[in-house]
Length: 406
Image (cartoon, rainbow, N blue to C red; front, side, top):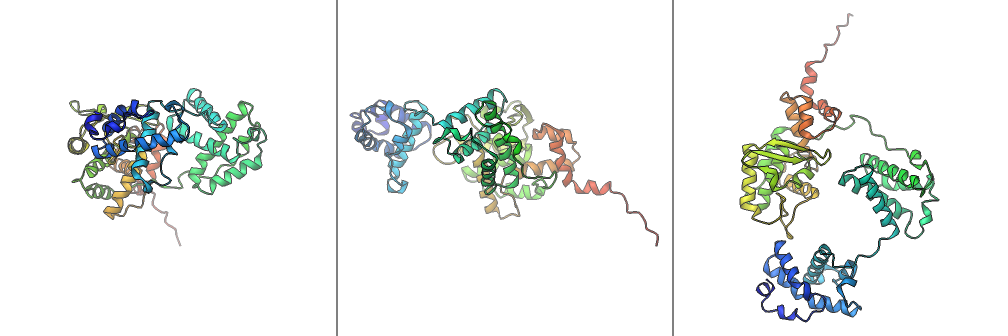
């Protein structure tokens, strides 16, 4: 493959001490990631320069090179040499995926967070997203305490330091986000005290931000606005076909961002006309009937815009490298089409499509249990929040005002 992709320059790669044994695999990996031939050639052309920089720094074996060492061979800013910057980052990703780079030992804070993540997974059976959020708060606390410099800081931890850290969190978080962060902090402090690494009872000294039940209404849109938003998506482009299918799924089945992003080709049962969705929070699978409208949108995207890439995710990135999208990409796509549509949509996330579906079903007479099962709620209490937007029904059961005699 290397001789076909880089016929005039591959001979310059043969003398390379570090990269030549991996040049063929690197080129094949770039092809699988969807890179065009020109961009692959530009990356291969920078290999001799990158290797020389490593040799000048005393690296004689690839196994001694860490990802940070390889990244240091890139330009100070990408615009100075875009091709070398792209080559360095692609090399780091490829070699790391093959475990060919040296993995430096974890610093004390990262080692402690790694143990905490194992505890969350094995003892508390926490979901991946929950572990990531808890680990992020734990990592931030250890950085705040400068744990890597002095590990005795945890043993000397007191309420004053905890209060200072919570104030730092509150300065950049909303009340709702700060409440979650405080819950993460309490959990981490309990873990530390159970291991004898921090004083006992610190978790009980933290006051959580006040959130009142029902103070915020669900982020629901009128259904005609939802339909107008879907119709405003330009389906003549590959990205438009992809985004239309994503948001139609959310508006039809009430899927979350992560559930749309994690949908795989094998989850679509074409002959049985079923859609299998893995619920991220409840870790359960839900089977939906595949409607004609949704099926047509998926077929249009897969046949005309997605092409035959080896990745199994249904929705792929619209930019290189080819790969599955994440939840953030769904949010960014929603915000982009909201700006283009100029519709009165005050919300920044696609989650409002999920809420809009719940309100629509409620107004059509669906019961709370059915709506909760569709949305993947564990308890009816999570679904009952939508009753507060069912204004017309509430008016129907309101009692007449008593007549007051003068």
